[in-house]
Image 1: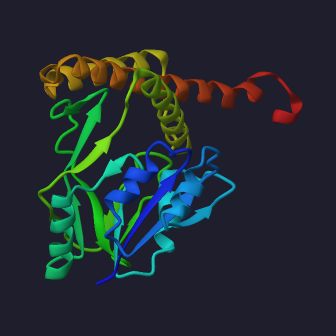
Image 2 (image 1 turned 90 degrees about the vertical axis):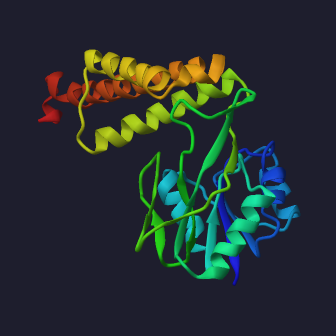
Length: 260
């Protein structure tokens, strides 16, 4: 049975080679790239990947659905450029699709944060549905934190997908800014509201939940860093949502007759 790996990229030259090498056993590699300027596209094509480029960025969910629409195989494996499929997971995937026991499978994801694989902090086992039969699942259209929705039950794989996430805190800060902006925009479009006080409460709760309830303290200094990152990301998301609300109200409050 044919299987395609699908992924989306932007400026992933530092990741794309090892990523594609880890899935070289798949029949096709399909990439949708949104304006890379660092050689990602050239490297991917040199390795035999089929690359499609887009001029605009519609959000994570729509972009992944676009990549999914390019697959013509029976099965799809969806991964990100900073993820790696181990030989053990490869063998389990091939055995699963050969068995025909399910149309979709999730798998645990083991993530590395600034040099350490994280087993607490709410980061593990972090099960994600990434393997499914074409036509039996799709991604939600969320701008960020998209999920896979399936037509039937989801079976479980045991071996983890490796996730080489943040290497340094500069990457952390960039991601916090990017994801909090997308999260605020998505929340604003859905009619949600926030205040500076609620933003502070959300940020504080995110920190405490990560560090104490999800035992982030067992992940050492990285666990504290993750808790701080989650607290900042949550605070920034809701304070940006509040600012969006203020901007939306400003024309009507200005007295401009064109605003009425």
